[in-house]
Image 1 (cartoon, rainbow, N blue to C red):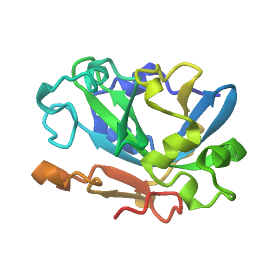
Image 2 (image 1 turned 120 degrees about the vertical axis):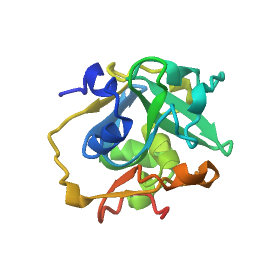
Image 3 (image 1 turned 120 degrees about the horizontal axis):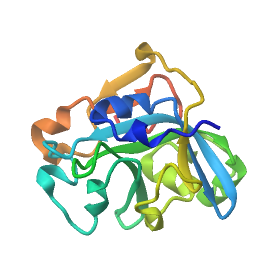
Image 4 (image 1 turned 135 degrees about the horizontal axis):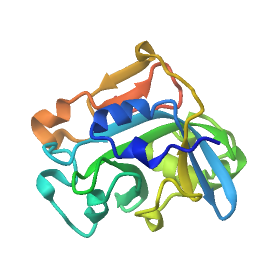
Amino acid sequence: MTKLPLTFYTRPDVVQIARELIGKYLFTRIDGVLTGGMIVETEAYCGENDLACHSHSGRRTARTEIMFHEGGVAYTYLIYGIYNLFNIITNVADKADAVLIRAIEPTEGIPEMLLRRKLDSPGYKLTSGPGLVTMALGITTKHYGTNLTGNLIWLEDKQQNIPDEQIIASPRVGVAYAGADALLPWRFRVKGSKWTSKAK
């Protein structure tokens, strides 16, 4: 097991990190059960000038406070009163950059994921969206601030190199309110993967 070190997360370019997370593996050990898979879709958010980012212009709230932490911790929050979303804080303290994990290809603990998702078979709906990933992996708002180099939630490099021509860069999903920033090609996904979210 080769966990990603803290230095992976504390680098300054959140867009590069979001791209490099494609092909890395995300794991959880919740209640002693290992679940996880290969990351196939991410989105980058830059705290400094990105109107789509929760922390843009230094906006600090009870929800966003963890974003101003040094990189390598989890930022989890609830949307629509239903879905927990899992983000990885990057950069040094006070920069407030983050990468949203939008989809994984499940590889470990699939029976447990199916139970959590209340599904009978591991079709693409199992982990093909940011709210589905967290449900399958057991991630909730309770994991806000979790150290990602520990043993509860972590990422690994299994040397799964995804060539540039197999990665699609496109605008992020659901951020039309951000004006020109909504058009930034900061969503990365594996071309042809059935596990990526279906949002265009």
